[in-house]
Length: 333
Length: 261
Image 1 (cartoon, each protein chain N blue to C red):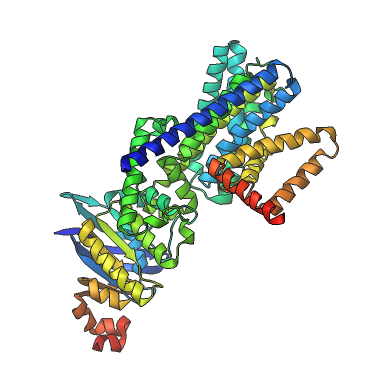
Image 2: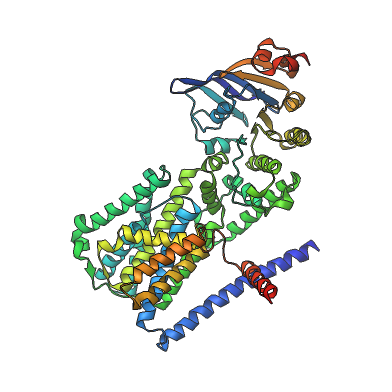
């Protein structure tokens, strides 16, 4: 009997994995068709790219700030490393392989800088760490502008970067990042990171080396930020150092906080919602930031824990939610 | 055979001597109490033994598997890996995580799969995760918290939170368990139950236990030996009956009534 139950739960797991896979493929094919038939035109596609990049940035920052509890204000710095490395490589080697190399090299370079920055700064806590990472991002920006200008063309920036990011690339990289980061969260390593957020002293006393896991989260986050940066430079074919300033780091943090610290699906939802809002507000350029800001204030007032809090969107969650809605409607009728 | 020897352990915070020349010895399988008035330095001794503070001077030596290891100055997570686990006086659970996750986290130090398996979910990820889950559930079942596995730690009643802290410490597979006021805030019935549980754990998990406690009914009932701390110094050491009749201890801590009893 016990065997039967195990088998059926194994089956159910299998079915749910297959279902998820199928819906992803479906999603991919539908958008591919929409793009092929030009229903999603270049303008809409650029919004889609921005959403994808923001998802990657937010999910990777959430790993550092939401799950591990290390307040980082330097995420745009890692993004810029990916962007510049990928741009410089693809400008030299104009081919898909050049792009693949640039993407990987950008991510790896960002991760290496993540180690170099993380080891000394992660012993700081809370707002001190935030200031240190902020300084780190500024240093990276200045390096690109003033010191490495032989390769980066200084403040004028790099232009004419070959464009390789198409829908398949965008889809694979974005979905891949979300899956890989969720895999990390739902592992012993991820649980160690979360325990540090919950109570660092208790985590240490339970045999969890907090420095190791903080650096691990920081480096993983930097790696994926590097990927986002590489995608950015490859799609928008122009980058300059000021694109990756303090403002950009704050934008990413806003997505994370709004979606919910410690919720991957929250980050994804917030990235989509915020980009759509800003797209619709495109029509009112003079009021855009006012309305955008007011919306942020309202969301924070009514949902200070963010859209998802620290929960994840799942089928059972949806069922509960729709069930509650149904009850409410029933009660009203 | 001693399992832990503490030799002249001293900790000063600036000019304040929190712990002065504390020496103690734990025999394997012993259940030892550490008592003393508030502020005597009991928790500081625990913090020194588990590496939360580095000692100013003195040594801590662990004898495990015929090996002799010095522990003073090591990081807490390394000391935990060597086999010393603890609970906290002011409960320090991972409050926003489930009961099951609290226990699973304590088992993380034994998990061997690396980052590659984590990201790509290889076979070793699944097999080890399954093992961790099974072991955690076993532990929760033995200690009667299995039915609450999906409850958030902060939503447990107070007594069960204390309980869960002990389970979490056990999950690290220790040879020495340090309990910091496990009965604090419990009513007499809960304390009696806890007393039984501690004795039972020692037998079944092959533990050496050092516990800080103010509840004398618990201490006198199960401790084989007691150290008494006052102003950071050991003022007495002995069996419960010796301690009860020790004049200095009565003066400093127990008071007349307990001494006469």
